[in-house]
Length: 120
Image 1: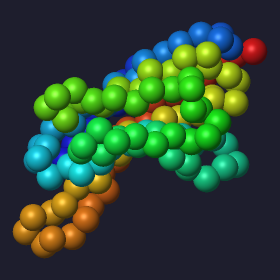
Image 2: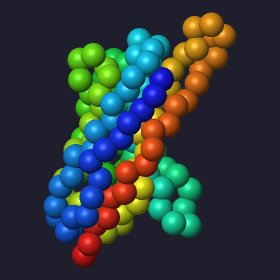
Image 3: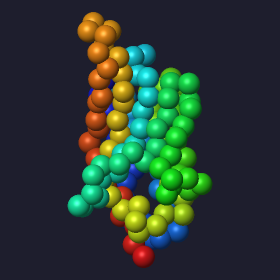
Image 4: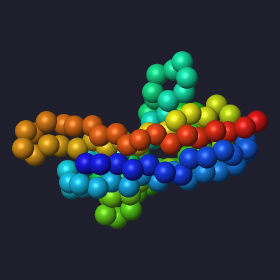
């Protein structure tokens, strides 16, 4: 599975951005996808996740502001970010959890990061 993220940028506090992550490869083996955020001096944290059945979960600090979704084919994932705050600044990475059918081992795949900067 390969992932390609896009959609980051510079926005003022209160503004919105939409991130996209396009998956290619063995899509049917993907069980869940998510967005993680990396900020300087902090560990990478899970911001939002969506499962194959479209169940979602969010980091407490983004609940009510961010919405994760995916298309019907499960090949493109989105993160709609509204009412952005300076503390949302960071590099956002998309990831996908899949099952390697040959080895029956779970695998995690990462896309390249996309920078989100929120100015106050």
